[in-house]
Image (cartoon, rainbow, N blue to C red; front, side):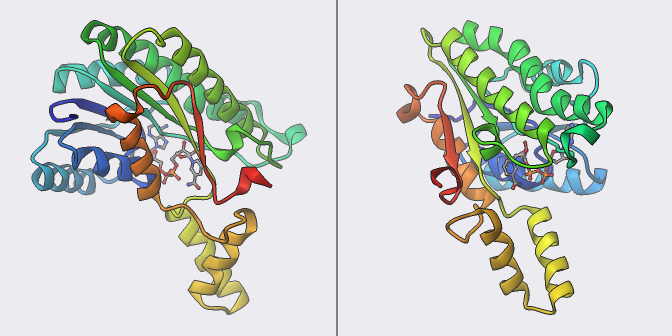
Length: 260
Ligand code: NAD
């Protein structure tokens, strides 16, 4: 069903975004990667994905926290791949500090990348989705889009904002075959999780496995982290025909975090 469609996945040279790119490429979707990294590594990734799945794969290094680069990313994808059918707003960042010490520039950076960039990409991609009569918009929010958290006011505000943007766009597109939903993961086992666990293992002189278990259990009632591939599978499901009446949902995948 997805063969020949084009997906833009922001922040997809690593982590959750890369897992989503892999899952969609496996369904024969042409991919516009975005994100930072060594040019040679990104080129190897691009070729690997294209060869493994027989799809076209491009990359844009657009820095989505800057000006209108998020809008330009959609223009680049349309120029290079011909269209944008699936938009996954995944790139995100955070700054940890209590609110009274939170620097304004960091607030603007977090809100800019996590909320203003998705606004820009959606605004730029929606007209052509309407023209072709099909589209999927998936916003990777966070459990912090649904509940509060300490020392991360900008992140919590941006992710709540992203859930709000999801609902607003879902209503504006409700009469069409275009859907907009958010995924709200708890702790996901991306690079930072493994680094935190490795540091803990060294500090406490415990095994890597024990350190990973302890880090996972900090927030997750299940004691497990979510795998990036699990988030990717949910994103792929949201692109399927079965999900055509899922609209404006904020789907948690959080090991029970929100249920506490
Ligand atoms: P990551 O740090 O592993 O990867 C981030 C990707 O975004 C990379 O490809 C990076 O190059 C790219 N990127 C960073 N800044 C960018 C910018 N300014 N412009 C364009 N690309 C940029 O991230 P992740 O942990 O996979 O998180 C992805 C998303 O999922 C984020 O929105 C994050 O808030 C959300 N999330 C992550 C977790 C988690 O535990 N990892 C949990 C809940 C939600």
